[in-house]
Image: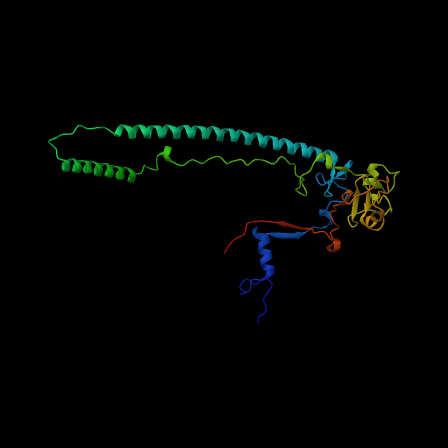
Length: 299
């Protein structure tokens, strides 16, 4: 088998490298890329603003938000739902009025048909000079003529060039919107009263907020004082809002199921695993692939 050149265009084999190169250059096909560390938010950053949280809250699914940002999002979604519901009610009233008009027009047509049917029943005087056979032939002739006229009228179609006879597009029907506000990350319903206030333990309490944000290691576990980061699985204790490592939960807290900060009794739902962005390494345990769906050319 002959050896292909690097820029060979006359080869019989379309290699995988050439396919990927053409896909990236043409703008067709789905592209997949693995995210690096620069494209991943830190564990203490808001999922909406992507900035370090000043007043953090966490959802029952473990997604961290800035309190002001998530409340503005919930209020904005409620306004949109109210607008969609108003449009849906307006469409419902319009459909109801249209149905009433259609029912009235059908009733009017039914009455007109009944009147025509009644008017067609006319008693004719008997002519003794005309035999029954000729009357039957005449009636059959009349019926034949009427049937021919009906057939001709049914076969004659109106011109489709007339603008009044062209089809019209109907407005798109609006589905009834859901009243539940969905979380922008998990897609599950979210409520204000389900948000839990989070209290991070700073590494050095003497530092102010600006000096703390310039450090790479900002917060530690409230119990073991281990440094927190994207590579360390964390959890939020609902009664106190303290952030501890998952290792501390497994080895210390789950034995007694008591919050070590305020001493309250814990349940399984009170331990909320905190969603982290990952480290950019393959062994971080987090799926860091991004896909972009683009049009595909079919052969």
